[in-house]
Image (cartoon, rainbow, N blue to C red):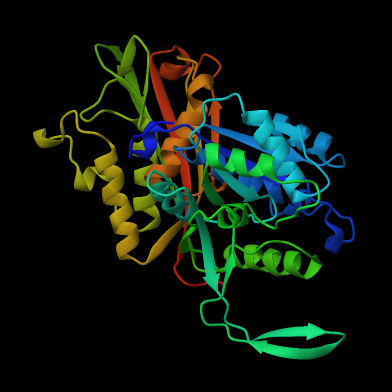
Length: 398
C-alpha cells in the first residue's frame, strides 16, 4: 500500500450500492425514482465522479434494476462500471470487493444509492483523514428520546448521550476491508462496513454528518427529500449571463476551465485567456450587479499579464459571498471547431466543480460549433457562453 500521507498519491475507488430490495418502499426501486431532473442514484453518481480524488466508481445493481442503471449510465455517458449485487447489502459489498480484488487500490468509499443529498464537503473531509485512519464514517447525534419496545410496550428508555446515527459515504482501507468482508460467514450479518472494523478491534473514526444526508428507506422519506429538493429551487434567485471569445494563436498554452489542453495553439489574451472561467466569472458578477471583469482586471494593467483566470474567478466568488449569495446552478456552453475536447470534458467538469465548490449535478456543460461560421467556425478561436443562478442563503436548509 502507498505510504504517502498525501491523499492525491493514493488510488481510491467509490462503490455505489443500488442493489437493495426496497422492501419498505413496497418493492419500488428507490434509487431509480426521479428527483427533479435525475433518478436518485444519478445524483450520488455525479458527485462521486466529480470528486478529483476518486479514480473509479463501481455501481452495484440488483437483478431488477441492473439494465435500467446501465441504460442511464450509458445515456449520461458516465465512466462507471456496473455489476450485479446480492440478496443482502453485505453480499453486494462482497461482490464489489471480489470485482476489485486484483486492482491496486488503497482506499474505498462505500455509499448508499438512496442518499442523494450528501455534500462534496463530506467526501473531502472523509478522504482527508484516510491517509492516517483506516476507517472513517460520518455521524449525526440522536436528538429524539430513544425507547426499547417489545410487544407494543416500552421496556426501557435508553440514554442518548453518546449515541449517534451513522451515514454514508464511509471510508476504509481497502486491504483491511477486503480481509474483513471475505471472512464473514453466510450465517453472520452486519448493517454497515464500519461494524466489521469494530468487530475486528479496529478503531472507527467519525466526522460530522449532515441532516440533509438522509437515506430513502420508505415513501415518507422520499416525499420529505422531494420537498427539500423542490424548496431548494424556490425564491430569492439572481441570474447572470456572460460570453467570452478569444483567438487561437501559436506559442500559447490552451487553458479551458482551469485545465491544460494539449494543443499546438492556445488562446490569446492579457491573462491566460481561459474563456470558460472568464464567462463564469463575468456571469457571477452580473448576477451580483457588480459590473464585469474589466472593472477589476483592466487589460491596460500589466500586473494581470499571463495571470491565471482562477484569480478572476476568486474575485467574482468573493463578491457573491459578500452579498450572502450562493451559486445554485451553472449552464455553460463552449463553442469551438478545434481542438476536439471530448476526452477532456470530464476533467474540465471536475475542475469547474472544485473551483466553484459546486456539486457536479448543478453544472450543465455543453459543447457546440458554429458550422463553419465566423472566427470560431474557421477554427481560429474559441467562445464560451455561461448562465448562472444564484440564491440568497438560508431559504431551503433542512
